[in-house]
Image (cartoon, rainbow, N blue to C red; front, side):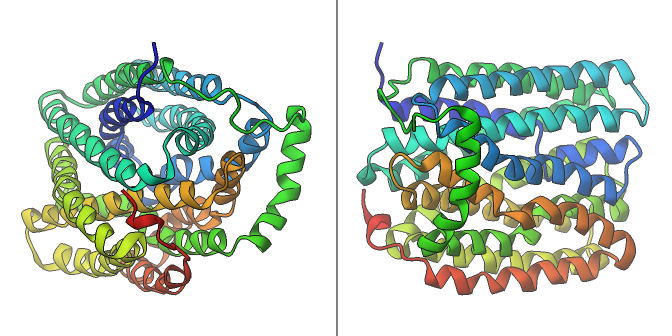
Length: 410
């Protein structure tokens, strides 16, 4: 049975969003390690595993996958490993119980989850670029974000209910188990995906492909200014994006969070994504992804000083409202970076471009841990102000991005 490829991606986006909400990196996961006895440094380590580790591994995965003529089997393999990682995490948390050993168990589960996600995402990028035509891509990425946001909204309600109704750590056991099940359902759309006969194989064996990918990295970066500017943008906003979990850590120190409050944070953040996505759609039509990227860095620059002020002088409900801004930032990031990377990468080389882009995002790989350590040494104030200032510098490479007219196409 052949289906419209976009439907397969939308199906996956919805159920992946449900999974993402159950293991949300900015709220749910920091709250889990903090409740188990972790610190801001522990939160930074977890963020590095979930955000940085897959980026570092992408170039190696891209080198392997670039040699393969078909990408769908490897996409399904990556998703299957993620399902097992989440299921294993649920079993581990249930086995350990009320113990600080939950932290290494969660670290191990999320390391497998993140690495297999990086493996799957390389194939995903190649398939999306091959199966969604140039004229449909802007609409596709915006609609995918809408579908994602709806899935997040549904699961955020469930997350808040479970964390409020079930005691620690049983609530997190249920979240991990449900995330595993929904991710398995998410893979269903790809089983019927009509993959092209060839999506970029090179004829090289995997080992040669990985070495070739490493050798081509410098050449690609020298020849493609667009990729360099996109990488520069991503690295400059990295401190802001990877410091978002520390916002929850600061809230826990200031307000002494309960599981119900964490669930509320998730719900408010998803609300920010849901409200902002239609606005981002209108702005893309007027100014393209460049305009949306500029708005994103301005929001980051506003958010972190606001977090410091509100945590010092305002009640918890005012702090929770800031997660609306965090949701808007995340929504803009997912629309712009994914869409731009697919568009600027040439046919047959998208897996390689995804690998180079991931490997060059060194800031996203290292800064979560660095930020967690710095918070312990110099406090939240300096780290959050630095995140705001550095994000504004991203306006320079954003303005140099050559978007042409592709972002205006329907």
